[in-house]
Image (cartoon, helix red, strand yellow):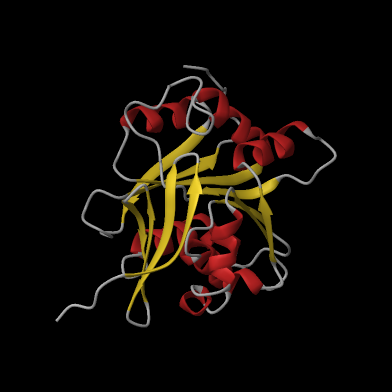
Length: 233
């Protein structure tokens, strides 16, 4: 008989009730308003996202990487497994309870990734962090920006003003990156408009499917083209 889900914790948010549920020893769900956001037994696309975004950095001296969205920590774990010992990984997470879960009941799933000495978790909006790296010329630019958020780019994302996936935001991300930097994004399904905006902003982009949760989930991988002329759609 299938074990019932147990609610470990529930927290009200502006978007609805955020819940952590558990079944057995390693089977967890994070839900929002009753909708499943993350499943600990299906994380192939998160792992692919982290590996693809940082694969070119495994021999770098001190790479600096920004991850938007902590979730259960699988993307962060893949990033850490790929990067060298001297790397610095900044993680932006909106909800402090998600960080508490990754330090507590979810920690064993990722070998305590958030406790890694290379990790600095900030409770903030990742868009604000990206803007800071882009506009402050005294700060070191980023080797990679990785967005693993529960809402990825989709067909109804505003093509210009979406705070993460619109053309203005993509150009800001480009400005936050080093000349050979990478912009990697998880999406629930392929959005041709987002891919077009990446190209217009000067990214040479590819897309990859890992098969997690069905064939729809996609990883966009954009490498900054330092010689490209930016355009705004």
